[in-house]
Length: 83
Image (cartoon, rainbow, N blue to C red; front, side, top):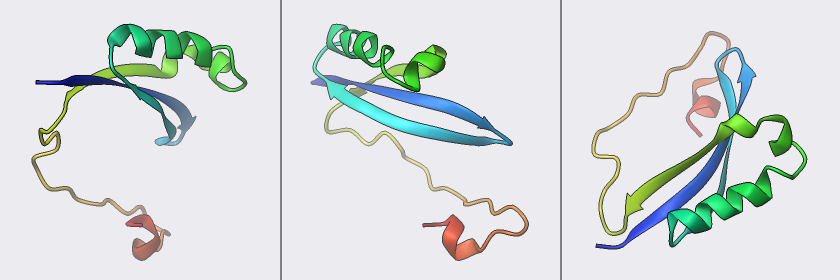
């Protein structure tokens, strides 16, 4: 079983909107932590240092095992919201 570590960043834009970024995928948690230490020095990330998340994933496994529903708020075009 091989585990990798995903480093991502989420910036809350308000009104339920977020700006999510995948920073990278790393072989060890330590590698991901070092990448976070580098990223937090960059423009934007330094203003939202609490937005970083490191998640462990086992390779070769499904990590989303249920379906999903797209919620469209009033005024949005449903076709644009699902893309």
